[in-house]
Image 1 (cartoon, helix red, strand yellow):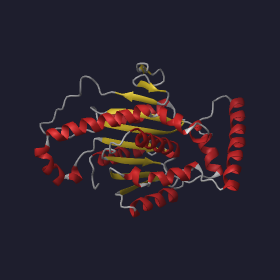
Image 2 (spheres, rainbow, N blue to C red):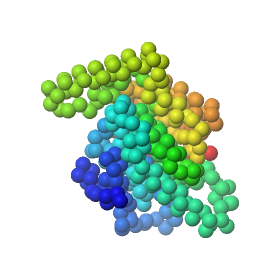
Image 3 (cartoon, rainbow, N blue to C red):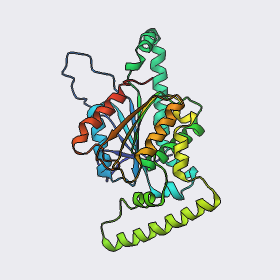
Image 4 (tube, rainbow, N blue to C red):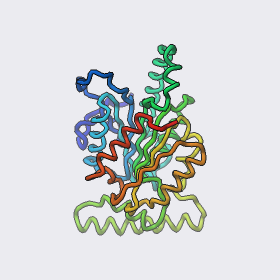
Length: 310
């Protein structure tokens, strides 16, 4: 029997479900709706696949932003770490994302129940599908988050034959293409503050990436980032997708904007509905900062409403 969820010390307002997954439940007393109009539908579940070694304080800001938009939604954060990319076994990684799979299966069950009890209104809903809210929003950050998301989809496929629910995706600062310098930069983005430890960590990163790179080229092994790029545009991953939005910047030093746009074009070529949002001057996974916050959350809200989606 699994141990009960516990409050997370690093993210006090979240509950720890596994070493890499935290849950934010909606408040028991929802914010009162002051308008006389009917409140807009809310997504039931939001999955945030965070970037490599994301700091909890940064993750919390995105949770707070989503909570402000969608006060009744459940929000899961799924973190990624260097071992996931380099040496942790696929089976171990799938076990780590199991709570997220269970959350989506629970969503599918509740959606099936509600759809069977509302068959009389289904035709009118379908007639307005482009304005229909989505029960599930998936927000993927950087190549690390994209890798964890693909692991999650693999675990879902192995665990159940239940079709993946209809959803929208936001791909923030991803997917890129692997290069030596960008891999080093990504791994060194969260080094310890102590100077001696930073130097030691950087030496270990250069040594590990060098050894890793030397294995891929002579053995002609597809690198992990390229595998992620292919998986994101695979038939299984795109199934149930009502639309996706790429959020990126020319100033991103870790993920090239042309690599992102190439991937967006491939998704369109496979029949996907794609939205591109290119920011100016913002860094990697930092498009929400400063003056970009209003635009960023407007994009999220628009995708949640299914604006323009198929």
